[in-house]
Amino acid sequence: MTDPEMPGNDPAVYAGELVIQPVQRWTREQQLALLDWHPMFTGRCPNCERTILQTHPARVNWDCEQCGWKDDLV
Image 1: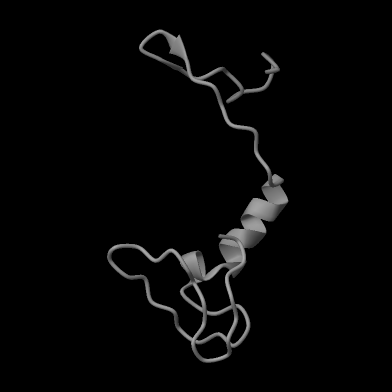
Image 2 (image 1 turned 90 degrees about the horizontal axis):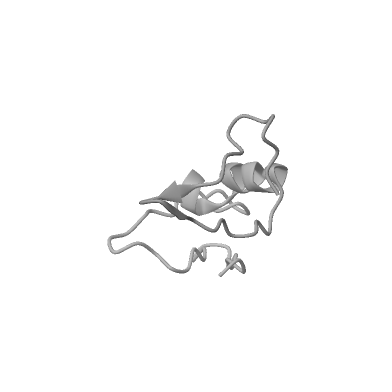
């Protein structure tokens, strides 16, 4: 349910149709922590800080070859 008093809480509409917003599984704080921590955003292993480069096409797994850290978010 949206609060009409809060800016940015208007329902999303495209071409006159309501766009259903997915339920968020993480809190805003968890989302921000992920941005500071995950190699997809930092380019570094969160364990040993080795550089993990983005590839084209984009990586699916962000595992570290140096220390063995595994991305279990996928």
